[in-house]
Amino acid sequence: MSNPCLLSSSIGKKFLMSITGLFFVLFVAFHATMNAVHIFSPEDYNAICKFLGANWYALVGTGIIALGFIIHIVYATILTIQNRKARGTDRYDSEVRPASVEWASKNMFALGVIIILGLGLHLYMFWAKMQLAEIAGFVDEIAGPADGSAFIFYWFSKPWVVVAYTIWLTALWFHLTHGFWSAFQTMGWNNKTWMPRLKCLSDVLATIICLAFEAVVIAAFCMA
Ligand code: HEM
Image (tube, rainbow, N blue to C red; front, side):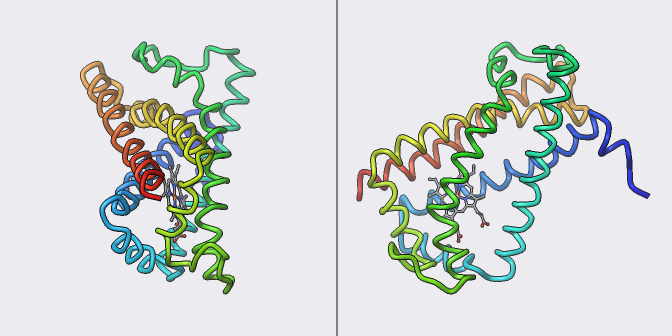
């Protein structure tokens, strides 16, 4: 029997959003670490791209990421519509909400939309020309499917791409600073001792992750 509470109640939907959101924090942390390798060694970066490639484990990973992403977006949309209908702009039950994250917490959906648009562009620039090209059996005119470094230098030599990625990463930073501690709060970890610590951890994690991505962009722009 399915669990009607998890899918239909507001807290059940927020719980699924929290689980998928925390999964994405792990994914972006891994993805940022992997990409940061490019700053020090484009050759080693390409070795990682070759290892991931279009192998079965990479395809399973892509499927899981896509599924988690769809769940996160669908529930974010449903909850935002429901909350706006029910409570206007006062969308949160809890009063445990540090003032510094007020702006991000109120704009999570708008930030999410910027992240989706950026992700669409990003997948076109990299994933479609690498993993998808390998599956579909074509070679993009920029480079081969395992030459991630060539794609990085190609795209990040263009100033508009650097600006677009910087905007995208700024939106991701705001989204992560609120999303990480909010996920723990949803799962019941919302006491007065842990909330400030989790808030601080959110800021530190979001900053390290987004700066690592931005460093890859700037380093490639300077070297290209
Ligand atoms: C400097 C910034 C970034 C670089 C250089 C970069 C690089 C790449 C590359 C090379 C791929 C293709 C891998 C392959 O198909 O073999 C990829 C895929 C992907 N990237 Fe990024 N990325 C960056 C930032 C981001 C950010 C900020 C996010 C999330 C918000 C993200 C999400 C993804 C996703 C979801 C995929 C598809 C994953 C998969 O197929 O398993 N990337 N990225």
